[in-house]
Image 1: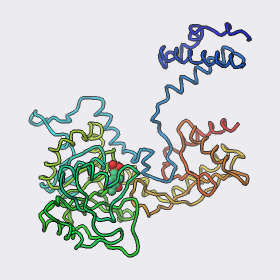
Image 2 (image 1 turned 180 degrees about the horizontal axis):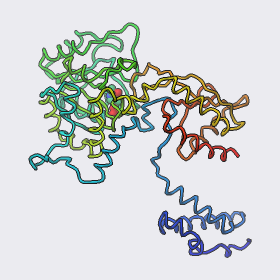
Image 3 (image 1 turned 45 degrees about the vertical axis):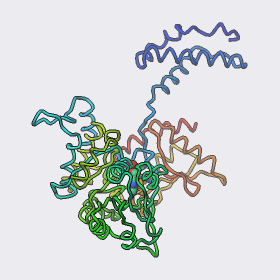
Image 4 (image 1 turned 180 degrees about the vertical axis):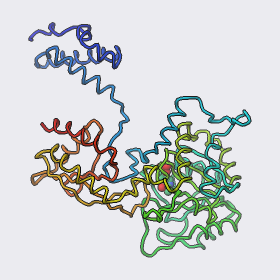
Length: 468
Ligand SMILES: *Cc1c(COP(=O)(O)O)cnc(C)c1O
């Protein structure tokens, strides 16, 4: 074909694509045909031959498929980080997913009191449940829910300390994931940060000396993503609460993760809980919904009813509130905590964190031959012990023993081969995300549950094609 006039007309190509039009609609397919014809003309002007009709049709199929592909795609998280912020943190429990779908599908009593027929309050959907779970149903404990824990801290500070001072230890001025920094949040909340103590040591007296006429509250921030070790001193929550209360001030704790279960009892590294903080005298605690709690992205503010009422009256609350699907998922997640015996089975975050290493290793051994076959001579596959981390700033030092499929490319300079391997796994129908360490591509299988094994192996065929 040496004549541009031999390119078919748009309508003629469209006639060959009834199935595609059925799937994606005429408008999108027409746009794809036009784009492919334009590309063919452009190529022709640069000396390329014109594509024949079947090549053109295939290109339109590929273009339409790419356009129709959702941007937010499910992936296999084999990074070894269970709560991976970039991969969406907690996987929700089935009960939470069902509740979200139900809330999305039909009108729901979001702010409607079914008993009286009057207006309700969306926080009431979880407030008493939270009081039950973290404070034994104490009637003086209430909760309000916002977009995430960063919002919870911002709102709490602005509502309780605007134009005044908040006292925080220098050892707790954390930055989380580059975007949440305690000093910056304070500034945005219009609160003056009074830093006390030193990076490694803060004493009771530091807090006592910092309290003055402008002090609005004392705050403790959980040092989620780092640890200060060695010659250190922190003031425990109970002592901080006593100092705050002696001065008539509230004591606020940003717990970060805030698990509601006793981690030590599950064989996991201990992590502070809202129960402990409240029992120690905290007036307000804040924590994330999608970290160790295992629920949807949310910020939970729990504590003294009078302070919660004040926080809810702040105009920022309206700007930071959550929607019905979030509340549906949160309520369903929290309900699971009423049955601690089955919690680890039902809540994916805890199920993954408590998964026995022997199970993971057995899965790796089972899968290794299929992965070896799929990568062929590109890399040798072995099963090796590795360590997972919890992620999202929880327990930064602790590691959980796990098992990985390790793909080691042949050759002395494996850099390029590693990039190609990573890219090939990312290009699978359900993209696989692993990590490179020590010149090898690792797939930590902690987060690949048995029910996903067949699906993972089945799609490896596509990897073989990519290699061919
Ligand atoms: C994670 C974390 C935050 C931020 O929580 P998001 O839910 O990600 O907004 C704030 N403070 C601490 C101590 C944290 O660990």
